[in-house]
Image (cartoon, rainbow, N blue to C red):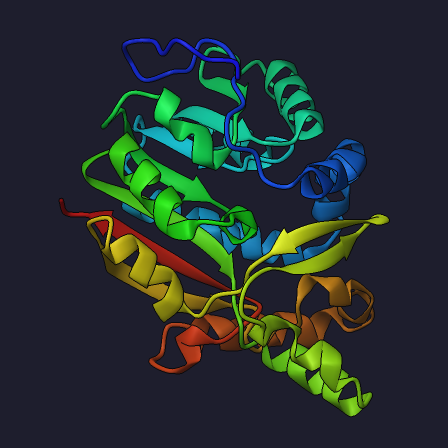
Length: 286
């Protein structure tokens, strides 16, 4: 196992790997790394979800803060945050994603504000305790962990007291998905998100080991690590899930209208627990 030394301000000096997620998951993300940013940018549904998550971070975390990007992918959010004045430590388990993120940061002239490391979330113990102001995880990296309880403790130790975790998590109850596959009589597909334990989700000829959560299930792991909820809202409640990009491209006006519905009711009790993802803000109190 490779180790790292961490700078005083909490930056990791060299990449490290410890308890990695399954090799097939890593290979899956490596296989799409080169085109991941472009494909996401071309998907209006994903762009809208990213904008909503970023808006929540900007509202809750002061500019100039040190943000830990958990599962940074090709560095899209890390570069955006750095361009807005944040210091970012970005980590990902996929070597391909790490290389893409480093190239993106270099091209944007942001290398002085972003450190990108080949490091799994469950290997964060190589960083010093209480070294960042906020942690950010977008589009479900926390769904790819086998031991969320353990990861919550590790993340907690990296955050200063009153630090925030802002996470976009793939949920169990996606109304569009249930309606779509039930209309086709594919009830096996309807049940996928309700499975206990991880399920293999296809990606580019590989599989990603994925666990789905309700907000209550997810928050239970973090409450045990000293967090409490600040806010919760649905992402992709009235709006179709991102894999329905073709539908979105055919009906952009309808999707924009559904987005306004999401903004209106997405934080309402009961409804906020549904959707393709949920967006939760948790504060470390202990």
